Length: 153
Image 1 (tube, helix red, strand yellow):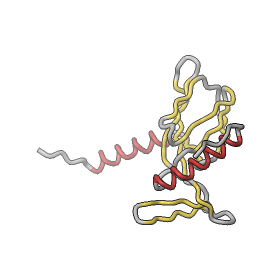
Image 2 (cartoon, helix red, strand yellow):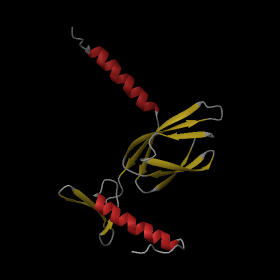
Image 3 (cartoon, one colour):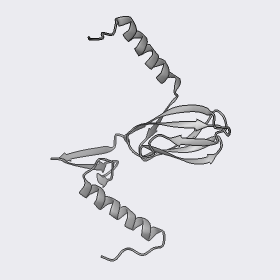
Image 4 (cartoon, helix red, strand yellow):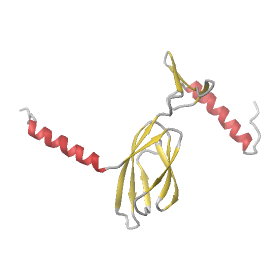
């Protein structure tokens, strides 16, 4: 026996889905950039659905800095000091600005930042050899800048 959804039932189900998503506020972030955000009231606990997509640094009980890590969609639940849910924010992270050039060479992907001159940069989804090479250089530079010595080769 087959069950067929009547048009009225399908319309009601779609409307319920729209009402649920319409209640959650949306916050748009840009990958690799920090955005300040102020809550409507003081928050005691914050839970990020996928910290691989977005993360936060808490400034105080009503202000955070939101950081877009990778393109995608996640959410952020806010709770008061009694553990009651205050809000559920939808967090959307978009790729960086239009100055990026993506080069697809076979199965390998490389990303370049072309603000003035094109320079290779690392972006989630790039070829592992490109990602590893650039992140290694960035780690070495960071280590040198923080007073450590460069690793010997």
